[in-house]
Image 1 (cartoon, rainbow, N blue to C red):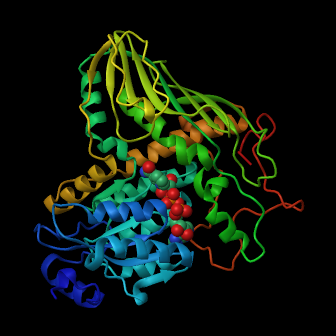
Image 2: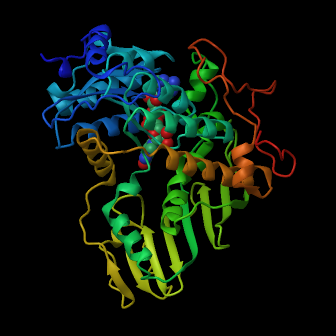
Image 3: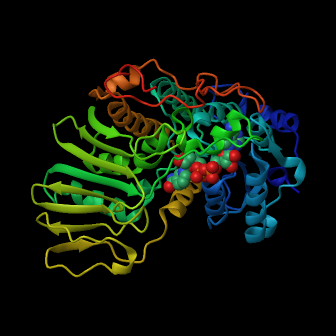
Length: 466
Ligand SMILES: NC(=O)c1ccc[n+]([C@@H]2O[C@H](COP(=O)([O-])OP(=O)(O)OC[C@H]3O[C@@H](n4cnc5c(N)ncnc54)[C@H](O)[C@@H]3O)[C@@H](O)[C@H]2O)c1
């Protein structure tokens, strides 16, 4: 077995070799030698956070066709999650899964052990809740690893500033980093963007985004055998320190894709929202959110989020221009089904039973179907950059997207207009000790004497969200 596909090759052996050939690559800020140049080199993967998306990202990684990939280590904090992820991947990929029991790690430090099993130039997948992103990315950079991290990458101002610095550190080491805003890799959205930039709908004067679904982010009572920390981690959409709540975790996509089409980040947000129907749930989310995001030219994105059973669903985004309108997303992230209409009457598509899309006399253009999944494209693009040694680092834009999501969320939660600078410089860091958590230690968020967690109170708590 050559060193490039031997996960157990010692770190010392590797460092000795690279030190001889390329100088002290392990030092921060020094670009790594280009490894995995050949399409026949096996890129090893470690999966940190073996839940639904982590397992999905590993699947996409192992499905790339531009060279061999192998999963060699896994890390999680919940044994059942790790086991079901391993079983699923092993069944699907057989020999591409080389993760014996001794390379399956369980603890809040497990990410280090999993990354220690890789060599510089390999890839770590960060599929954990966003609270841990900067902690685990920091270690990936230290180890000289390329990285794929899920969105959001931050949940507040202080961690965004930290992430922006880490982005620079990763680029200084020539690391390739993908962020799971996969719509950016969707060829249908890329074609739409080109058409918008070419002026096909004129100047964008307004955008609309909707993420309205049947609930989410609920947390029932804590089971007696679960620590408070593990209870929260397992229900991370419920707690702001872990995920930024459903607002950041779900809505970031619509906010990001609209801002991408607009070619700018919003500079301020004004929002309303409230909490009426959450019953005994212990979570910190609102049922509804409605945000006006303002762009530098004064145009707006109107975003509506709703987490409420029985209400109408919508999962879509639209751009309205001076000459026509565009559909950026229909019914979900994929397929994009992007299209352009004359005027502003966009036919409503409420569910998949109404597909294929209705014929419409105002339709100017539609991306041809079927489309390849953007979740696969994002891995094709990342691994291509690794193998071809192309500059590739999505962390800055991922951190900015995460920050503007936090800006809208904070505007709703405080009942104030929040500007980009205010959210960036807001000193409230939700989990300053996210790098020091232990399985039996306390959570950064403690229940009050009534067993409940603090929730936002717009107009009452105005400098911080809880
Ligand atoms: N891009 C997308 O469309 C998309 C879709 C779904 C989820 N996501 C993102 O993926 C991330 C994970 O979401 P999910 O739906 O897979 O959740 P999940 O709960 O299914 O998976 C998270 C996993 O991380 C583990 N974990 C938590 N803290 C950990 C830690 N400190 N160290 C190691 N493991 C830890 C959990 O036990 C769990 O197995 C979130 O950031 C979410 O926003 C993105």
